[in-house]
Image 1 (tube, helix red, strand yellow):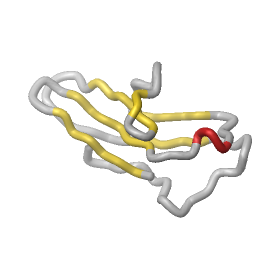
Image 2 (cartoon, helix red, strand yellow):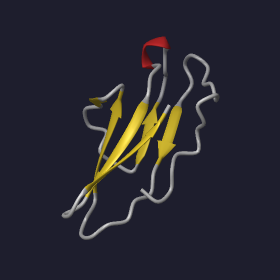
Image 3 (tube, one colour):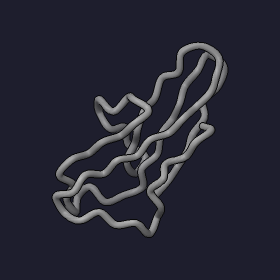
Image 4 (cartoon, helix red, strand yellow):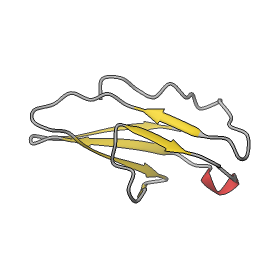
Length: 79
């Protein structure tokens, strides 16, 4: 991951707002992405950008993105 999300740990999103995070990764071959919250995969969230509209208190947590390429796995965590 060569560009980390812009949202910082102390940033807040109001209830009903939209969470938007994105990463940029480099690697050999086509990259595949997987976003997670608190270590668990977010189903269907497999793009370099994560957009969660209508967030609520239950969406609070540590978000991370993984970029997979043919040679290795690169995690980036941001909370």
